[in-house]
Length: 232
Length: 298
Image 1: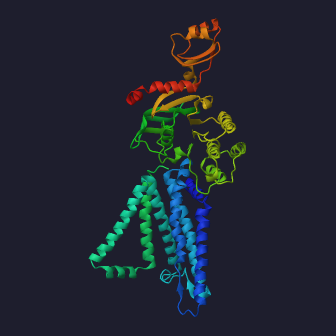
Image 2: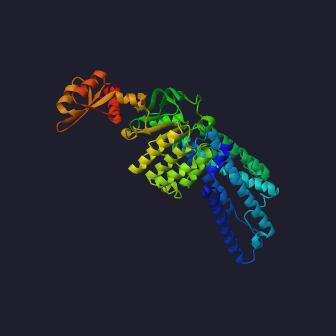
Image 3: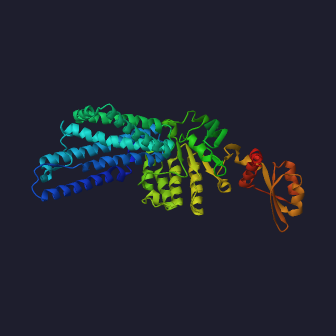
């Protein structure tokens, strides 16, 4: 366990990767979004609240973090005589810690927006109505699982690349895209769009959170099986 | 002597070539081995498999009596920094050493600091900006200061200048004398490291062509030095692997151990015996050992 925690410290050597860049992306997003809110608000009386989706940017960045965690730190972990299992667990713990921190920041941001009525401008980027519909805890969990999902997607993709190379990675991405299109086609053929839409509409933040965590767990499990046979 | 590494019938095949071809050997505790051979002979592959960084196609590898794969108890007693080692993106040498200190229980910080000073390593510069020699120095410092029970050095001198290489050899020997352990040094610069080595394993084309004490390898041949006519008379009928002449003095390296009678004859004719270059001997041996391949080429 001690060595697994040391892997966390090894990953966190990349302060830029795990801390500063996400914070910069978040800070930049806030500034830009606020500027846009301000611009719109200064153009006259805005009757309705404004919602911005820019805050998801640092969450997307987690996919990049997932890739770097594997490609840059795995080879060094091998030189430190770390087992693949220790590396894997330590890396996921690092991701979870960072995702937790980010989720916390998002919830704090949400509270700020609640107290200040959207920065005094009626503009919201963290306190998105649907996400917060089941309370702050569920909203935090939602942000956490979204960040974890992005991380695992990046990590899993990088593992496929390490294990089998670029060709297989490209083929699997194209395969996934084809599956997606086939799914759309199937729904159309079955004339099931209304049902599908209704299902999406009925999703609650907690059920989507559960679904995201389930997908992340499957991908994480797959990554481990691949990593066990990967060469740095 | 106890074996710390036992390898039986190890084979590693890639799609298009066999990198390691059915080799078996043992490594004994507390000695310095040279894993010698040409580039692409399979040295790095063997070391990667021993440290479970790579996987064998077939065969059995035991380290401290156990399989090393995913075996933290075994792996933590070994250190293998690759010649082409990658480091975390933003890492500086200082970061790398701090992490190594976390993972290697015998890490000697004062020794690491001394080596940093001697190699004049800029420890706060990012590793990806370092020169080839400085990059090698990072690996060398980790390897020596980690003081792992089995330490692998993979062509550790790449890019290091003569002074830095000498520092490496001197510090390694000094620390080995105080803290005996098993050291496996891979190299294609044979003569430069030959004085360090107690045992040599020569690998060529994925096969082991020599696995012996350095002393007995040296005894396999002798260099005879002296008056040309006397030298030629002595070496007549022997297998000559090297010949050099300067004026009336000739130096000839012959295969085969010298008998007491030989030595007496040498003394009588005023000839000297000089130590043999390990490199010449090994080059000769690897050429001898590969007749099958040569046949295939023709």
